[in-house]
Image 1 (cartoon, one colour):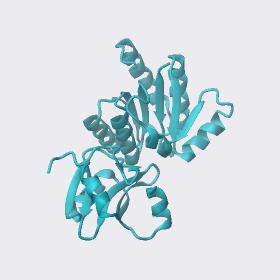
Image 2 (tube, one colour):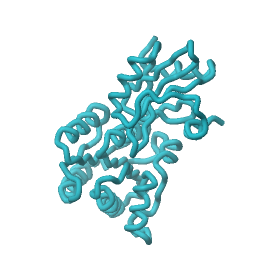
Image 3 (cartoon, chains in turn yellow, cyan):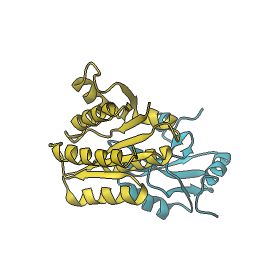
Image 4 (cartoon, each protein chain N blue to C red):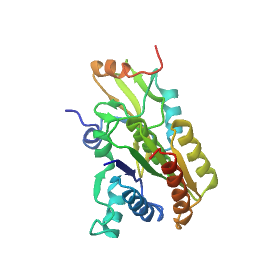
Length: 157
Length: 102
């Protein structure tokens, strides 16, 4: 079974948690075994939102995950980025895994959004899904669906 | 086995040159403050901890003081530049990670 890693950072933006559940749902529908690596605070939000683990089954602390990570550990990396630190974590995970990757970038501030997009595109070959989003995850969901469909049709995932 | 996280929590023998900053600001601090700089790939392990950042990642070496300077990132707290003392043999191991030649 193909394995996907969903990377979550600081859960400051309300869009991250529901989008993480949605992304996990979509990947499981495609046949992926999904693991979520997150900070303790992001993990608590997932546990409260999905108490029986219908969607979020495999969970690991982000720092424990990166410590054990190696090339080939996962076939697909999906990273949520809305802070500078999250860019650093995504680029590092991408560098270690050397797998197909999708960066979901969201920020209220247009300049910061562009900054994060540039940092990711200059350092990785990740497909970028981005939107000015904070409370409302819909723009991200729509763009993520398009990106996933495109990657699936091209055989990359 | 040395654990960087534990060391930073339990020791006070280190310096923080900048904290809660962006990664690019931290690279400037390292490049302006370290007598010797090497560049490493993202994910390399130094003192048992993965270096997180956008490569090429600067790591400063101060052989006279016996310290290294490196970026230290936490998801909710941004990036800091930490300077800690390390033994000479560890400094030599760090130099081997350099990706930008001599």
